[in-house]
Amino acid sequence: MAETRTALVGIIVEKEDSVEALNGLLHQYRASIIGRMGIPHPEKGISIISVALEADQDTISALSGKLGALDGVSTKTIYSKK
Image 1 (cartoon, rainbow, N blue to C red):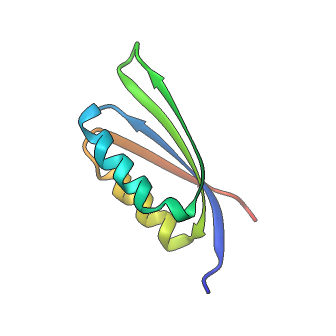
Image 2 (cartoon, one colour):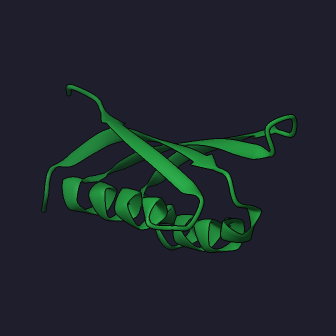
């Protein structure tokens, strides 16, 4: 079994049309998600989402990459040192 890591994926959504695909990806990876927080920023017309994960490196990278490939979606992933 691969060693798991704890990570946080920060997501900025600038195109509302991508929300359905984003939620579909998060649902697909739900077994690895510890928690999720979404904050709308109506003044800017964006949403800010943080997703905490516990998964192997490949799974975290795959999710982050798929999210970042969505139109109008930016991501950044940070990992715990332990």
